[in-house]
Image (cartoon, rainbow, N blue to C red; front, side, top):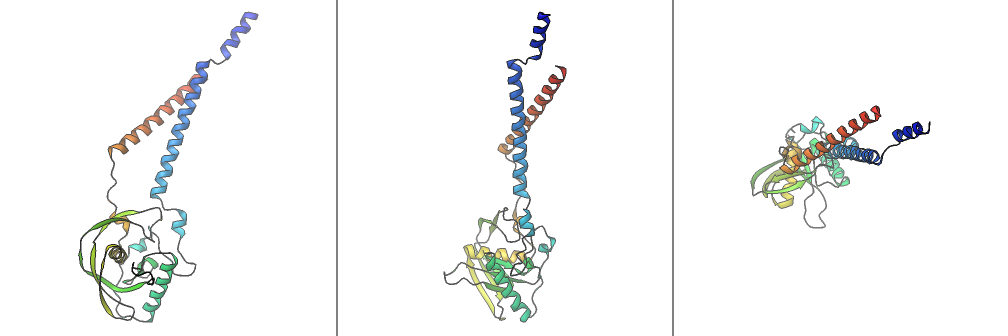
Amino acid sequence: MPGEKDSNLKQVKPTTNTVQHEVRTTGILALGILLLCFAVGALSFLTIPTVADRLSQHEEEGLGILMYPNNMVREVAEPVGSIGEEEVQLALQMENTMQRVAGEALSAPQVGVFKRMVVVRLNRAASDTGGLVMINPSIIEQDGSSTQIEGCLSVSNSLKIEVSRSERILVRFLTSEGEEVTLQETGANARIIQHAIDHLDGILIVDYAGEPKITQTVLLAIAVYFLITFVAVVLYILNRRKRMRA
């Protein structure tokens, strides 16, 4: 009958409010999923070294550089008893590797040789671009303090750490010719030397990172994110149930 046909059409045809409700539900759900993907992506970028960094051993022409979290970078280096041809060749290879990767410091443990040797490139005259070899370096005086952001050849490029170091140091070491030298450095040069010596004791810049600080702003952001996600999931479930009953 005509009346029954019209009644059935009215029951099947969705109302404007129903369509708007479905659009809002879908939009909120999409927003929740987008926020979740963003959070996971940001966490991965900040905490997980990239595959390229893990596999970056810099073995094209020079020595391979060990990458954190390889446990070998935690080994404590042994003092060099006597300087021979082996140490001289190692110093040359380390210098070539450091220059090729545009680093400012490289220690023997970073290339898998556990001897107390480092090569540093200090900020001096523009013509002085070579590396300084330090064998058995020891800081005998230090004072002052400064805090700066540091990176490391053995740590993911995406990870930079705020590190506090002495502003002035007096360091004693042997050259590759066996000559004992006492050198005073300040500022950036002092920081470079301290960074390199840390590697001899198995210390990395990640060890200077303090406990994660959760501020009120971070807590609020987390709460808002989970609230949005919860609302999106609830609306999605309610919408599904409503469709099943229809």
